[in-house]
Image 1 (cartoon, one colour):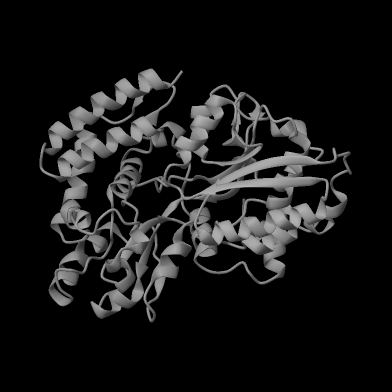
Image 2 (cartoon, rainbow, N blue to C red; image 1 turned 180 degrees about the vertical axis):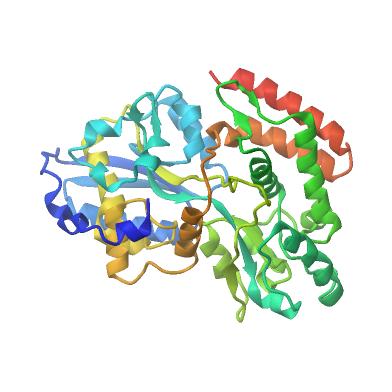
Amino acid sequence: MKIAILRNTLLAALFVLALPRIALADNVQLRMSWWGGNDIHRTLLDSVRRFEERHPGITVKTEYTGWVGHLERITTQIAGGTAPDLMQINWNWLVLFSRHGTGFHDLRDLDATIDLSQFDAEAMAMATIDGRLNALSTSMAARLFYFNETTFAKAGLAPPSTWDELLAAGPVFRDRLGPDYFPIDLHLQDVIALTRSRFVQETGKPLIDEAGKRVNASPQQLADMARFYQSLVDAHVTPDVRRRASYGHVAPHEMRPWIDGKFAGTYQWISAIGKFIDTLAPGQRVVLAPYPMLTDAKDAGLLYRPAMMYAINAKTRHPRESALLMEFLLNDPEAVQAMELKRGVPVSRRAIEHLERKGAMQGLSVDGFEQIEGLPNAVIESAYFEHARVRDAFIDAFERFAYGRIDADAMGQRLHDDLNRILARTIR
């Protein structure tokens, strides 16, 4: 999906004529769930209210939480047959709840209500299982490098554009600004994502071999991922796990060193960078940096995937009304205007057209989206990379290594064995 092409799309202006009118039941009550921060809650609550005003025969009961615990909540609801009609889900949850494509309603059966022509084919393909379209993306996302330009200027540096420049910035920060300043803050999940990106740049292949139900990396390659992380710690590029743990269990964008500019970078999803900007102390500026590439790399190693998705309960009694609410949230100008870029650049062409007409298609989210489009990105990672058991195996291994309980070689072998065992049992 290219923004330059989308800007020239004229069909979006005719959206009111695109879908036929459908007969809706009266006195329908839908349930809708999502996670997010307070700004997302306010935005979606307002959009739901506008939807109800437009469709007085439908009321929507909203269920919303923060991120923590939301997967467990949805898991319990789906297992117990009490899931909402319309759900916000994560892309990697499709392999948990809909292995064969039947866990959610096939949205192609509802194309008289949802204008699927507005959505990018690649995004829809990533939500299609065994020919069934299970969900629609609100936006597409990848992790990119963002740096506090103000802090880098204090250190006499420009934000890094290569791996070598990133490594070289650490000692400069320590010597010129002090031991509490670091070029980038990486918690362990960031470390895993970043070292996976380098692995893809080195090998040109995904880390998870879904067809073979195994990890694509040797124990030595997994050990090298740990060694690269250690090189970042040793070079004072990122704080070690003990220093990070001393700040408590706090979201990275709410940590005082980030707010004050002492942690001067983040490897972050483009759909989430806004909340990092919002917490900065006044007078600081964050910029998007070029994505670092190894010299011979043919692929950037982006973990490019849907940021968030809407899916309809396969057992809902009101599929058409649920689809109408989804169509409103993703394509209607009122809902699009309310959400703007809070969740990144929309996938919907109509939504982009509307935001462009309103002059809202600007900022770091748009810059990030355009950077992604300009990077080589042919390697698509398996959703099982983000499976909870796979994630926990990575975190456990990296945590043991980071605290010095095992060396890199032992960590690589342990992680290799654990991942192969987990993938063999999980992928069916």
